[in-house]
Amino acid sequence: MKVIPMPADANANGDIFGGWVMAQVDLAGAVLPARYAQGRMATVAVNQFVFKQPVRVGDILSFYARMERIGRSSLTVNVGVYAERFDTQGRYIKVTEATLTYVAIDDSGRPRPVPRPEM
Image (cartoon, rainbow, N blue to C red; front, side, top):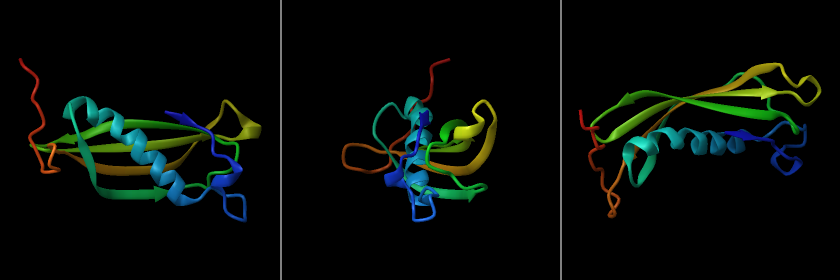
């Protein structure tokens, strides 16, 4: 996923709000486990969230997700966020890293098993 933060997403110093970055990480992190869950799922934990560098208005942010673990009903994903600064496009720096856990849920919101692929 790629996004560009806008002025409305920034604080008075021109840095992007951490909560805005967290929301984007949650969206990007949900894509991969959704393929395994094959239905509804919910974010149940933010296991780790590290802001390594500030994110600025105009940065081009790239989000990369990697499956860490698939349990009976839960799925854990690591998301790395890299920025291309407006004035140095083509050079990437890691600005954020997070680990999130999602759980597959049924129509009533209760945990359900993650489907296992047929072998």
